[in-house]
Length: 301
Image 1: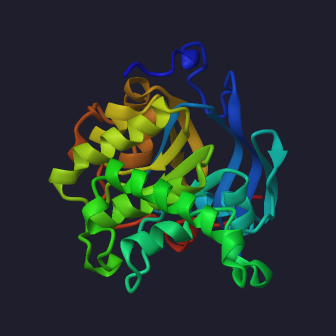
Image 2: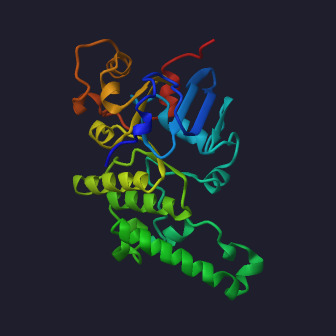
Image 3: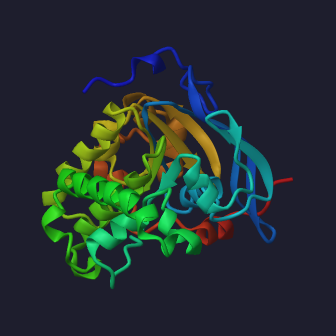
């Protein structure tokens, strides 16, 4: 599918303004003691596009995700989503406003079935209220709608035959698919994927890529963290690069891979190196951790 051509005139520079940003981040900083893990001066995410957030381990990518989705609190800073301020909202309210996320380590509830996991992702469940739970006619119509939506998504993600299996019996790749499908139960405006390819076997990789592109084609904004540079080049409309908590580069995939600031971020110094070589960019040390980022530098004045 063609990329979002509205980004063609956007400057290839950190904090570049977008034609129609759905997420705007200003001055978001997260300190851990005397250390700074995230220090994002300005970042905009284009509506309806697939944006990749890349960088070496410890760069602060997952910490930024945690801040924006209500799983952590910033030391300073503000951000808006779809024109509405979002700072300091709890995760549940962030999700209800249309911004949902997945995690590096899947959060499937292992002792519940796949279908039960899916139903948990739906919004507007009248059966959650004690008053209506005692009156089945008040919640059964909505439950039927939720089940139909869940079956539609499970079929789309090729998990329908697993709907009565315990989530704990799924493979790592199938759990990734389940988490993505469950995130879509609330019909989000934007989905944030934290390393969607981590632990996925090659047989499911192409399927996941197709699902992510289909989200964009259906009008959903996608922001994802990923170390797989083949995936980044293949499906991203725009790439933002973080290093030591800051956004150091932005642009289309081809431009970013050749940016000296990106080469510095991954290799530590300027080199005559082709960052199209996936092996140079894939970090073997594991997931991005805020603490790892914090230990690498002292707080800036």
